Each structure stands twice: as C-alpha cells, then as structure tokens.
Amino acid sequence: AWIMSTRPYFDWVVVHTFFACQVLYGYMAMPFFIFCIPMLREALTHSVPSAYDKEGRVRAYEAPPPKDEALLKKQLEWLEEERKKAHPEEVEKEHDSGLGDLLHTLKTMIVSVFGFV
Image 1 (spheres, rainbow, N blue to C red):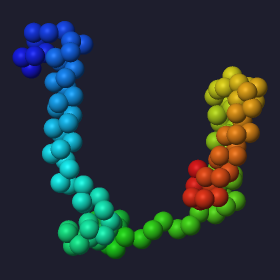
Image 2: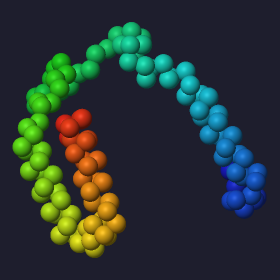
Image 3: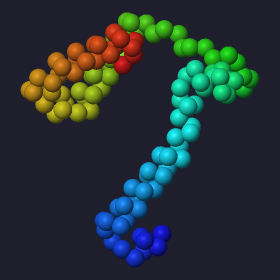
Image 4: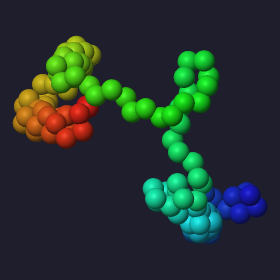
C-alpha cells in the first residue's frame, strides 16, 4: 500500500511489486496442485463426487442423460436464428469473409466429438 501511495501506477517499482506478488502466490499454491491430479485427489481426500436431490439429501453422482441429436440440431438452429435477428450485420460479415463456413464446420466437429454446443 505504501508503494502505491508514493509512486505512479506504471512505475517500474509498482510493476515489479505486483509481479513479485503473483510469483509468491503461485509458489504458495503449488502444494495444492496435487489435488488436481484425479487419481491422487481420491486417494488423498477419500471422497467421491456427490450431488443433492430435491429434498436436500446427498446422493451418489449421476451423469446427465445423453442428449438427443435431433434436439441438439433444433436448439442450434434456434440459436442461429436468434443471433441473426439480434445482430444481422455480424452474419453478413461472416458470409462475406468466408468465416461462416469455417464456424459451421467447427461447430459440427464440436457437436460430433463432445455431443453438445
């Protein structure tokens, strides 16, 4: 706080002080990195993913049901229509620059690989 009050914000001392704080924060967070490794997280914490039901009771985690491909396509078409209504100038720019086809190809790849948009 004293450094900030005596020098301008972009002075080299202030910039170096902020950088030193970032480095110190990174070093102090390093021991907790092992909890990001999936196999070690379960071994160290002895916990499993859980969820709550509507009554507030803890239940075993259940993955969401698989999404229907027809429903995903319908939702994507609806989102594209809404985007065209809201920002028609952006849609024209995409078609003029050829980015529309590229974006459509990328969206198709994402849907086929991950099953969602």
